Length: 332
Length: 134
Image (cartoon, rainbow over all chains, first blue to last red; front, side, top):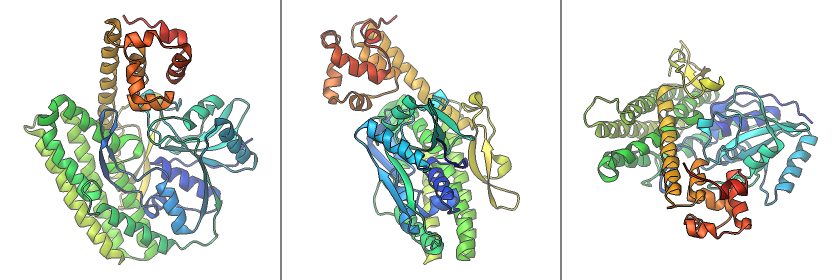
């Protein structure tokens, strides 16, 4: 069984799956558009949730949120199913493939055999599309891969029923209704408003204030936790920031690309200017990653590196606060 | 990021010839996509995490050799799990998993319980039982 699915590589898995599935269903929507309308840009610091023995920082909303918000704002219908039994999960997927419906899956990364070993952690919010099945394999379109790939029946089963935080429980999703005409303008404005609200939220762990909180903690880490742990935490920030196209710099560039597209749709020149500004902020995130990686590689020659990093991140927070205030104004 | 600044460092990806898609601006400032073979700061962060894990594996192995912890602890580290992840794989409370770290308790575990662990670690019960640390 094989559906006539076209694979497009993307920078981020959830955007990519959404964009690819919608393109397959006749709605030509780019990855940045998915990201912007689905309000994918986010920041949250979760000290009580430990990932790989370090406090979790997420640069994205909860898995599934981007596609759900996008669907709501464009008036699409998506069917989502979770399964308690593996047999039912397999049956439902096979049924879909038989009916020529490529299906999105939420999976765990640890058993994705086509990933380089260094990328295989217990992270359960990865997304991919299954578009066909052979005697031994499932045909996989993983949006972060350049080309399509495969997993054996057993391997796919394992990743669908990975355990731990955000356990996917065989989760499968696919659009069941895609209107011919969508209100792109309205959706874009809703998406932008949502992102501004998130990033400027009056909560200490979310958005700009979350970034500020982490910046302040960086100063304290070496004293409170010792250099070794502080370095590990720092590495974790960068890993979450830069791994597989997610996070700090990468997300800012996708968002800037979205604003550029939105400027044309809304005929709003201010968004074009803001796109440039967001690109500059993305570059600052990258500078931060470069500086941080030097610290835990012990190659930084600057004294007081932790304070310096902290200040750098505080400056980013200030820039972003200013940016999202301007963005909010630009669409109101 | 400008398109000609897209990093092409030799990273963890280049071994497998995998390339990542990134968004970058062209000479007119318009967004386009480009492929990146890897970025050094990222590779460093990743190897830092891997080193951290290797260290923990080595410590666990030594502890098994000294009869301080059971092989469950070693395999947990080897599979890059923590107690939270392991406990959800085997479907037992964390305190129970922690208890099974004790060599004495481990020695008395039934094959049925051991099977849950060996399945989670993708090994056989025999391998788990007969693990000898060097």
